[in-house]
Amino acid sequence: MMLSRVADHQYWMSRQMERAENLARLVRISEEMLLDDQSLGGLDAQVYWNPVLTATAMQQAFHTLYPQPRQGDAARFLTVDERNPDSILSCIRQARENARSVRDKISDEMWSEINALYMLVNSYEGAELLVRSPQSFYEKIITSSMLFAGITEATLARDEGWNFLQLGRLLERADMTSRFLDIRSQTNVTQPDAALETLQWGAVLRACSAHASYRRVYGGEINVPNVVDLLLFSHEFPRSVKHCLRRIDEVLHDISVTPTGRYSNHCEKIIGALLARLSFSGPPEVMNRGLHAYLDDLQIQLNQAGQAIFETYVLLPGEVDRHFPRGTRPEAMSDWHREQQQQQQQQ
Image (cartoon, rainbow, N blue to C red):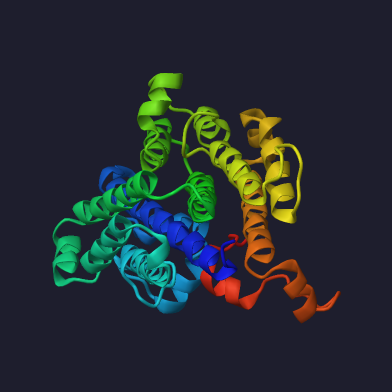
């Protein structure tokens, strides 16, 4: 039987590595868009970064630290600002600390890769690379995270630790895919421009490594309903929200040893209900309701699933009832939310 503390460390190690990778994807594509988007002209680049910061729930923290932001501040805040607990640097540092706490539960190769990435982002050479070639810097982070996932796949036994690693990675991936979509839904468009919209939605696909898959399924023309269909509802694409939720459902049932179709705890019920909802809806329902409203509700439920996982497997239900009598239980346990920095975006 695995200790809940060990499960928590493994869950967050995997989740923070996935978060660092997705933030690197996001900043890399955003920087490319700033170079490619000729429509910006003389506009302040911060107008472009605001939807990115809002969708990732970091806008308030950014404006607190940078009340009068200058060019490059947003990318710096998302990448290497130690005051930002969700920056790429902070995520990698926290992932390494969690890995250090469970070194005897992970393979030597996993530790070597995560430690090498930590050394890179904290080194003079890494800082120099970020200045000289930001795209190369972000590519190294993405490559290292994917290599870490591959090493985990190849070297770790399929035990409870493996399940919690998968759980953290998949839940974070589903959340970040929804946020990539939400960036474009919050972009203010005063004068619709078909070419610009194609460029922006193409950037979302590239951020999710989904451009090639999109072309194979839908052809070359990019439109919003097809992007939503691929990134929210695809059975096959590994970064789609539905694919991640289906795998999360399988992992949760493996952990609880509950037959598929039955539910033994609250987190299984939340994921099962959310998966059923996605299975019986599609792009028309999303577009009719509004993409932002749909994604906002989805992110709330993903956060609720994360909280339910904590209460079920880290702070066990009996301990919750003992420490917080009926009617006094807080909605968010402080220890958990110090770790779970990716919060629901503000409406």
